[in-house]
Amino acid sequence: MKTKLPISILTILILSFILTSCEDFVEVDSPNNKLIRDEVFGSDETAISAMQGIYNELFVADFSGGYTRSVTFLSGLSADNIQNITTTNLERMAFEENELFPDNQNNLALWSSAYNIIYMANSYIEGIKNAENLSPDLISQLNGEAKFIRAFTYSYLVNLYGDVPLVLSTNYQDNELAPRVSASKIYEQIIDDLEIARESLTAEYRNADRTQVNKFAATALLARVYLYLKDWEKAEELSSQVIAEESLYELPDDLDEVFLANGREAIWQISPLGNGSIVTHTNEGNLFIIDPFFSFFAIAKLPESLLTDFRPEDKRLLKWIDYNPSRDAYFPYKYKIRNSSELPILENSMVLRLAEQFLIRSEARTELNDLPGATEDLDQIRTRAGLDPLTEIFPELSKEQLLKEIAQERKRELFSEWGHRWLDLKRTGRASTVLGNSNPTWEDTDVLYPIPAQERMKNPNLSQNPGY
Image (cartoon, rainbow, N blue to C red; front, side):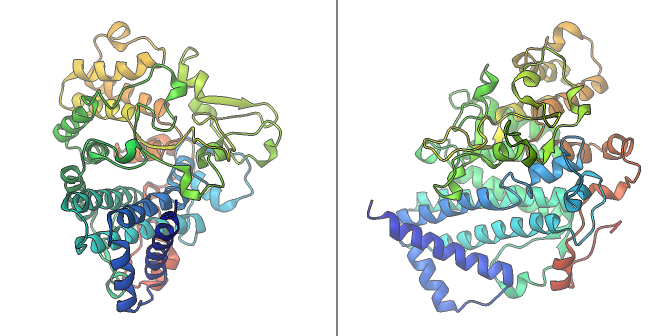
C-alpha cells in the first residue's frame, strides 16, 4: 500500500506536464521535463502506472468518455441513431440537424480532447524510448500500448474531419503551426502504429484486465481500418485472426452479458476507474438510461426509425432497448447501471468487441465474392439475436442484397456505440441518400465536421473543410 502514493504522484506529474504542453503550447524547462521522465520511467512500476494514467484519461476525455461531448453521442446524433429529447441545447441540435458551425463548442471538445490524448501518447513514446532501467520486453509492451492509443485516436480524427495535422512529438514549436496532411498519410501512420503494436503486444491482457490492450485489440482495430480503406483481403485476414482466438473471445448467448466488465465478447474496454473511486458506472449508462423518477434530466432517446428496423422477436429490441412512459421515449439499455459508487465494477465502456469482427469479416467476404462465408458470419449475429438464419430464409441472396443485410445488421447491433452508424454511412457513400431524405438542409459536405474556429485562430496553417 505504501507504494501507491508516489506512483500516483508521478502519474499526475507526467500527465499534468503533457496536458500543459499540448493545450497551451507553453515551453517547459527541459531539465524539469527530464527529471519527471527519469522518475516516471525509472522502474517497471512507475512506467506501468504512467501508462495506466493514459488509459484513465480516456474515460474522462470528451471524445472517448462516452458522455455528451463524445464520439458516441455526437456522431450518434449526426446519424439516424440518437435524438435529442429537447431542442433547447442549440449546439447539440446542430449535430442532429447536420448544421454545424466552426465555433461549436462540442466540436471543439471532440477535436482538442483527441489531440490531448495523442500528445500524452507521444510523450510516453518519447520517454520510454530512452528508458534505461526497464526490461526490453516491458519497453516493447508499453511502447505498443501507447502506439495503439495514438492510432486509435487518429482513426477517429481522420474519419470525423478528413485531413488533420499529424503530430508525432511533444515539440510545441512544431505542433502549434502544424498543417493538415492528407487522410492517406494519417492512415499510413495509423497502420504503422498498429503493426508495431501487433508485434510488441502479447496475446495476454496485463493483469487479466481487458481495459488494457493486447495483440488482438490492435488486430481488431487494424481489421476495421482496412475495412474502411476497402482492402477486403486484409480486413478478412485480420478479423479471422481475432475470431479464431476462441480461448479468449466468444459471443455470449445472453445479451445481458455482452457489456459486463471483462466479458468474453470484450476485446477492449475503458474502465470507470479513470474517474477515480467516486463513480463505478459507465458514462454511457449514466447518459442514456432514463431514470424512472428523475426523467426530466433525460437528454437523449432513440428515433422511431431505428425501432422499426427490429423484428418483434429480436432479442436486441427486448434486451438493449427500454421505454420511459413519462417522456414517451425509448432509450439505449445496453448498459444496465445508471449510477453506482460501489465496487467491484460490473460494467466497463465497450470499445472493441467480437460482434464487430464478425460483421467486418462478413462484409469483406461479400466484397471478395465469398457469399456463403459472409452469410455464415452474419448468421452468427442474427441467430444470437433470435432471428432466423439467412441461409434458411434467403439462401440465394445476391451480393448487393447481402451488403444491404450487413448494413442493417450493423445498424441494429452497433447502435449507440462509438458513432458506428455515422461512420458506416460516410464510408459506404450512403450518408446523403439516407440522411438527406429526412433532413432538408443536408449538404454533401456535411459528412465532415468543421475544423474548430478556435484552433484555426491559433494556427493559421489550418485550412477549413468545404462547406464551412
